[in-house]
Length: 270
Ligand SMILES: [Zn+2]
Picture (cartoon, helix red, strand yellow):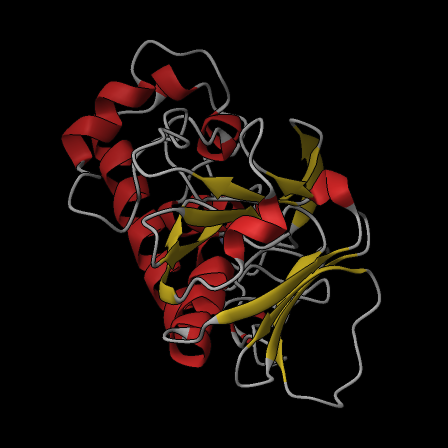
């Protein structure tokens, strides 16, 4: 599932590849995946518009349109974007295609069809439920301490809650907790301010490094150019069941927390 670094990489790739292109036509093959306000024709509204930007919020890719509207896409489990030239073969599960006037196209594929591409009107508050961006100046140690204080929720479950800190998924939650030396099941309110400070810094560090390495490919993730990420080569704990902890040598264990596989070190994560 693409998390913040993967979606950031996809958005940067799209910004480079399709900004300035004009949509000639739109092919919606699975109508449930194209969402628009009542009475708005998704395909017809897009035709003739120019892509003016590509950016990210949480795990969503946002394509800015010349009308001031946006196309907001949550890739969910298996969604992917591919920028393609005429004659290039389609990915399995291609459900929406934007054809540009220069004959290239943007294909939106999602084998499991959980993702949605939503046409958002100017000023429409689509992201009200999303929490702070962890790589923004709004993510402060003080704010993070306030977020965790008094909560009995296991700290890892809190990290996965998109209403609090947006964009962290299973991989980077495991990695940040290992880096901070914190047991994933610890109740949030049991953490000292010093531990929360370490976790805050670990989240920022892990996400920044993963963005620099263009994300993690462990489940088929590729960017908009079809390229894999690099962070899977430097994972400290995620997916390393039975392998020695890089800090203390103790074999990494896997438990299930909030219905997600959780890799951690019983010795140095307390
Ligand atoms: Zn360890």
